[in-house]
Length: 419
Image (cartoon, rainbow, N blue to C red; front, side, top):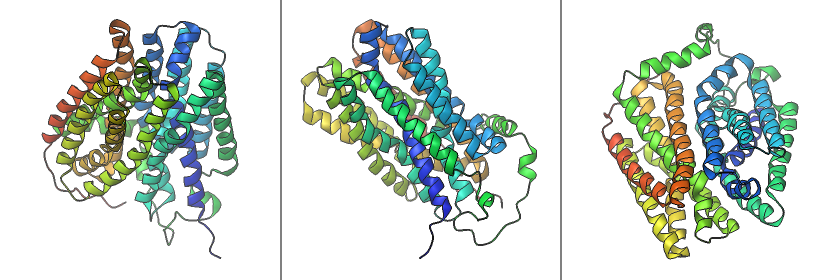
């Protein structure tokens, strides 16, 4: 019987690690009302903590990539998961809003960063030669998988018991993953005497790329990118992408539904169902990005997302579950469908070798938009006692993003330099 290559075990562990980090971040929406009721905290302060978390994990991504090259996969995964565990334990004992900002915004944001930004391409590039694209696709889908499975479970636990029991479940899963990482993760295939999956013979690898400090490489990529118009157009559109997805919908959708009388479990289930259609939409988007002009794909993705965000306030005001279901399906299909075309345009514009670092900075822009929407949504609710203006403005901004991407110059594929 043919043995399973160890690369697949590494992928499975990374997959479940990303699920745990992803559900920690996406669970923020189901805790807002609980924190508000128990501690009498201002909702804008609660939203600020989640905004700091989104911003920090996005902007630390390029530096996490640098640290991976220096410290190795195992130490980085252990450190990141231990940081998540620490943040979750401290959450159980917090009593002041500034503690939430430090714990959830700082500690948990840093802990989630490695798993939700650069772990997927790192594992794929170092452990796979064949099926590398499949590996990235599987790991990318894991965030949606965690949201799909666990958000309704967390909502039920909160309703039946308390938010502390829900945090306890995430803490238990995080601790379990720490133990599994400690026992089974290896830094690279050569550590256990094998080659990456699909590689037939040992290759002589030049050490030249490692002479530079990885942090220097990250900043040099940024300095090169800011001279190119396409970088600003992609970063601007991705800023709006983050604003209109995990920043606004991921953080405030559940609370918005609750404000119209939708039960917590129903609202969390609607958000989790988006995960199903997210998997379908992103996979289909990857297929389409190989066959059609990526600029026009992004144009329609942003425009249609904007229309769906304008539909949501009407659906909630009418109390129409069919319209909410339509929104859930339509928005879910479009949630991260923008990622494959954006990566493709970055690769064609900057070349394969440099596009990874530059995409990291484009993703940082995504998280800056997410942070703005997470905090801004809380402020809008504070002043208007409603999220309607937040969702309306997000829909308008999506229309603006569709204009950004269509202004990107169409370029032929740039070839990578030999590795």
